[in-house]
Length: 180
Ligand code: HEC
Image (cartoon, rainbow, N blue to C red; front, side, top):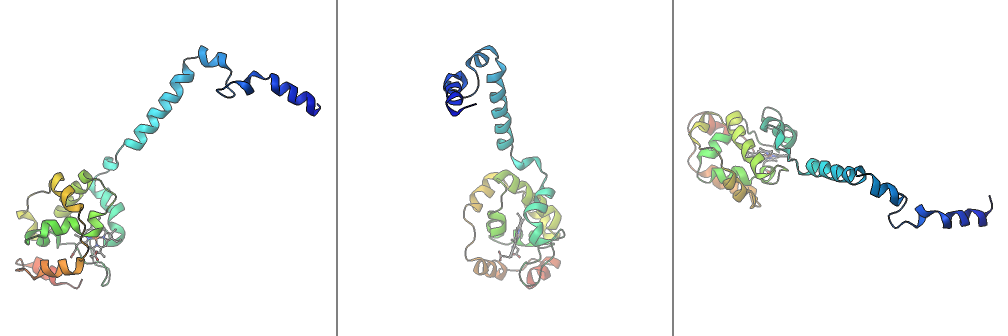
């Protein structure tokens, strides 16, 4: 086929000149599926994007958001990551402790939304709370949402201030004195 012949064919090809591209106009009008299919696909994609990760329980969110640093059992890693196992309740019991727990960078800046983070924190109190945890009220979503918008910048100073207040009794006090 010569070049002239090919371009002549192309010029007569209605598909090439259809504004909608290569779908012949006839099939666009005749088959309602051509409209429904893209709509359904968009809807499905929308659902996938909009579906929050809340489908995961707090234990799974801990595993993906926290465990890399805090280990499955909340133990310390050297002098870098403090132990949280048995410590969370003692922090909660101190003045400013609730706020501190939410504003710690790893918590405040996690990928979880406010509801997921609230569920995770309440789970964390049960899991790693220790003796002191029983006296604390559960976290509310609005409370967590408010605190986390203001992550701790001067973390060491905030921690020193928090832990300088009267130590809670028992094991929790020892846990709080553990090296940071
Ligand atoms: C990238 C590592 C990392 C991740 C991820 C992380 N943390 Fe932390 N976390 C730390 C470090 C390091 C500290 C010590 C304070 C600091 O330097 O930020 C800390 C401090 C804490 C504290 C305060 C302990 C104390 O004694 O002051 C709590 C509670 C805590 N993290 C919980 C969590 C939870 C819950 C998550 C998941 C939502 C999480 N962290 C994610 C590294 C991490």
